[in-house]
Length: 118
Image 1 (cartoon, rainbow, N blue to C red):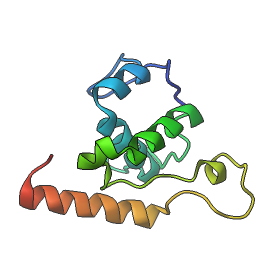
Image 2 (tube, one colour):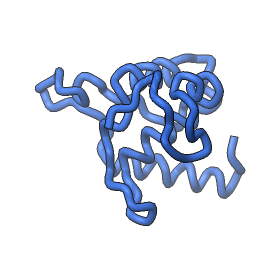
Image 3 (cartoon, rainbow, N blue to C red):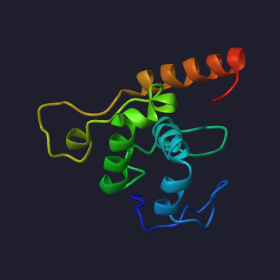
């Protein structure tokens, strides 16, 4: 599944809204969704989906993560190497490993339990 900027989200709190609109309103949600889909969730019944978003959406996410204006929330997420993810880099470089993403999510959950969410 490669959801693009003009596609609508089929479920969740933004069900029926275009990705482009969600990006304007709640970029941290899209970053969280990218990572959550990459890990998967057996309880909710979905397998890991590394290529959930289109390259266009992932490039926007990386751009927002790199922006100094977003450091309040972006420092807890990793940028992905899109060339490896979309098969343009054959050197073996790719995206964060599942274990790295799980560690990031656990760290975020621990932080939120101790300090609350941002």
